[in-house]
Length: 396
Image (cartoon, rainbow, N blue to C red):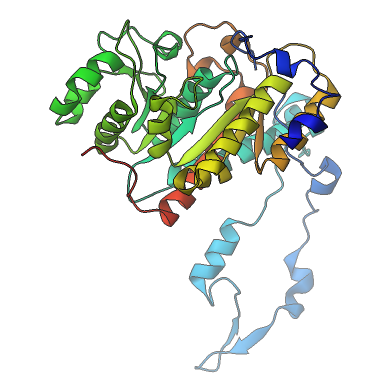
């Protein structure tokens, strides 16, 4: 494709890396939201309202008495809403400034505290987006990249966990790889039953209690359905049947895929997906494979092409030395491939350990970055649910 020609000088070894599988990644700091400097947030000095008493507009009541007009109470609903959103100047709470504020000498926050306040506010807004989103049918997210070792499983687990923790549950994370993957190993718990058992019993599941027996409940409130041992090769028909049952009892389904986009299982997952999340590294192989996936989905047309056109990239930092030229080239290639949003996930030791992932153990920066990504995913799901009816492939 034309992208390969343009990037030979940056990714000279990408073409020879097809047989190489990277180890699980170890995810750049999340960009710090812009916050106005403290000098702009200094609280105004108190002034006596009596100095301006004569300037307050008055009007005559019906009984002839004068009354002060109120921009709030003339239109109570609109006025109170505006008042509730009137920005207030915070007082410092940390360091020497915080000590002085507690002693009665009001001090504006330091630049560091303002930055922390900005990050906290951004996360609250993202959480609100995730929590308040609604749709009239179950929706699903496919996490995919044909290149192995790009962090698909950790991304699926953490993204599903963030969605569940904010929404209070009703999120299932399910393995849709042809052969057993690492989803159960990376998730919390040691379930007795898993995906292979559910494949066998799928036609007998009639209630949520039954389905719960095949899951690994997480502290995030997500439910994980992965392989607990050897199982038959997953087919597209099995993916569709399992998805149908999961969608009866969960509002969101997050699918952790394998490395073969031409396989029956992957094609089945595409047919029952509403949003596509592509994990990438700052490396040529994972980026070029992601672009190849988008190209193939668009060539398929229909729902697959629509899925590619709504794709979201999550760029994971694995702790190895970063090259600015490569980072810029990855951004350029993904943007030219039609990906409008790229979320950067910083390095996180807990993920790098390649053991069970517990949401509460992630660093605040990682949690913030995944929460931002989750808000983008939810917006994409809302768009998909509005523009498509529940006519996705179903089992006969």
